[in-house]
Structure formats: structure tokens, C-alpha cells
Image (cartoon, rainbow, N blue to C red):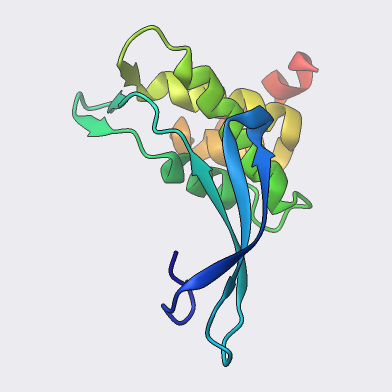
Length: 152
């Protein structure tokens, strides 16, 4: 594995099971004496190939980084540790692995993300919902916030 900072090889410092045994978490360190950057990688079994059906009908290969990026943007400047976001991505993927078909509607994935954000952080939930559901004014936010409040 190459160092994300300098591109040199790295060495494994520690390995342990992660995600309930679904992957291996490895702590690595850059082998370059001038860099020595430490970082974490995950090794997981390649799952079946999922295809996401977008709102406009296009088909796109599933990319876990899109879920992570959406969560990170929604949770920006909120008191949510990065490992909690990673666990949320893993939980969403665990549900996707049980989806009966290879083609998954983006709306299903979005609702999974919203379910997890509802429990994680209300502000992050509203941020994600505002983009995902295309809020156009303050009334849209208010309606969703009231729905969120009733859900508790």
C-alpha cells in the first residue's frame, strides 16, 4: 500500500478484525524515514456488484465513497467522530448486501442514509434531507423538522 502523502511504500503496524469480522483494519506507517505518516486502511471481501438506478433512470456502479461523502458533508462541523461515520457506512452497506436484487434505486439508499442520520444527528439529517429531497424554502425545512420531531 502506498503512502497517501508521499506515495512511498508503507508497512503494517497493527491488524485487527473490523465490522464484525467483515473486514480487517490495518494501521500503517510510511516506510520513508522523512515522512512516517500513519494512516488506516480496511481490507474487505469484494461483494456482489451493485448497480444504482439514479432518479433520471441512468444506471451507475455502486460506490461506497458517495455514501461516505454525503454523510461527511451532512455531518460537517457537528460533534460526530469519523469512526462513527465509518460505522454508519458499514451499517448501510450491510443492509444493501441483503437487498434482493442487483439493481438498487437511489431512493432506497437515500432513505437508508436518512434512517441512520435520524438517530445520529438531527442537524445532519436535515442537511441531507434538504439536498436529497430538494428543499426550496424555509417551509420545507420546517415541515421536515416537524416530521422529525414527531418521529421521536
